[in-house]
Image (tube, rainbow, N blue to C red; front, side, top):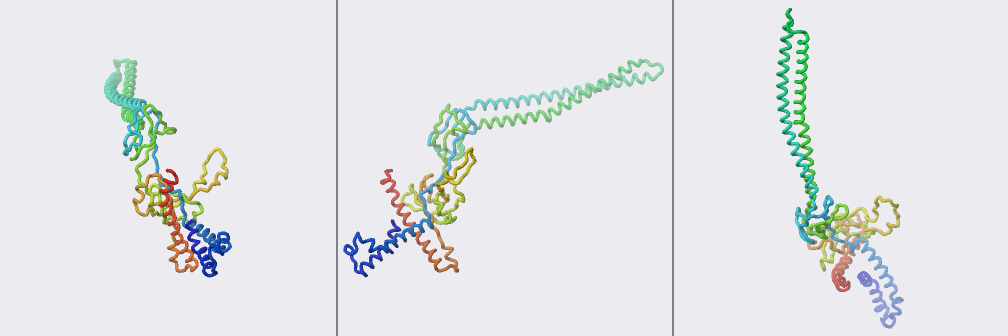
Length: 409
């Protein structure tokens, strides 16, 4: 409507003035409601052409969208293990701090695993004490075996030396028996040494390894026990928290609630039509007005333009895709931030806004080699952005009226 009014000033109004004051035709006589089209046909035709051209240029070079939202993330109150709720520590819509307990699951099984792991460590420590005793016992058997071997060896040597004389006081059978005894005592000593080596290896390697494994099992059991206590990962407000003791929660199927972090709005996510994909650029200046901030215009700047359109996303499924499902064009996602920090701090997370983006040819106009017609065209493109800015201000002015009066909200 505003574009039509502006275009009529330069087309219909001059045509009427010429016919009224130059040709002498008067409204109500020569110019009537029935002859308006014939008398003002040139002005009306030019007005319609100029209006359509102006609207096309405005919305192409200065795109607008009503799909601008202060998006925010939520954190699911989700346990890492499934189980039944034993106790809850917060209520619905309660504000919590980071690390504050939210709920606790039944931990009887995990506590039993922790106690079992602790008992296993205690058993291994007892085995280490017993192994030390066996090592001392092995040392005693070695001393005893060495003494017996030394005694048997001395008797063997004495009898062997005595039998070298012509008298031969000992029979060859007794000497052979003593030699066998020496071999036997040597075997006993070797057995005692091997037993001591085995006990020493058990003390130095086997039992410490078993204890380390038991300690690792205890640590794992304690971690599983800690998982039964669900705490807030960040400060925020607990929403949709309706679980009670006895309810079953599952990390795959049923979360316990939603935690909305305490974050200020620092950016807006806007979806512009695909026709403006070649116009939308990073560092482009824009303006937004939000329903939650009536009668306020906030200047913003484009910080990122997503180079993909979500409507064309393809994921592997068990069915073939039909291209007709992509018939509805998606939008170009643009991230916009306020020029001055803090201007959107009081905007609720998830607030809906109307956004304009304005094309600026200031840098192109600084080029000395630019032609006159191109310079005039770029100036005209920058100038018509004022019309879109006026439209945004009219929308900001009428938005509360449309929402509260006409919309019945």
